[in-house]
Amino acid sequence: MSGNILEIYKYGSSVLRMPTEIITVITPEIRQLVEDMYVTMYEDDGAGLSANQVGVSLNLCVIGKNLGEKPREHFPMLNIQILEQEGTEKEIEGCLSIPGIREPVSRATKIKVRYQDLELNTIEEEFKGFYARVIQHELDHLKGILFIDRISPVRRSLLKRRLSAIAETQKHHR
Ligand SMILES: [Zn+2]
Image (cartoon, rainbow, N blue to C red; front, top):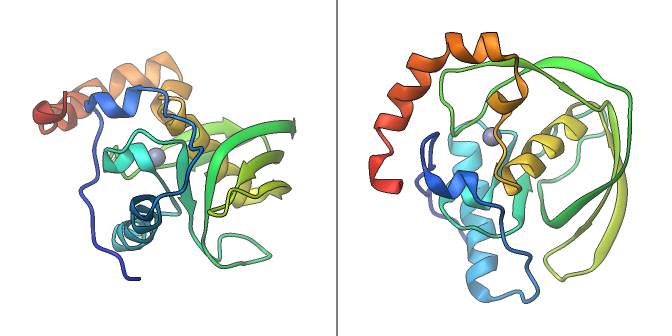
């Protein structure tokens, strides 16, 4: 199975602000979507990508490979929940849906999550460092939250014009 590059929905698209739907059945369309999401993520040099960023409101994201000190192959995460979290750390983040804007965001340094794989097996796993950050960023997407919601109101107001300019390009996705 090979993937196609999909359109990335950007700030201002309503699908990015809606909580996504839990997945209970894996269809061939979902398998294809995951392949397409890998290709789309790497095309734009992303570390993770959520289904609603390509316009599909499902509780599914893909995580890129080689993000941490223990690199692994890219993998999909379905129906994610955070079970435990530890510590906080502020680092610069960006988002494929908010091009050109990068801001420091506080995240837990270590998380324990429960999610499902593409066979709907339930997995509980701990992540730290960059993986933990990327997963928290994607989990936010799946709830309709964007990283700019987590920066200071002052910083956000300074970005207002640039955000409006991005939203202007997404009128057809409102
Ligand atoms: Zn993002």
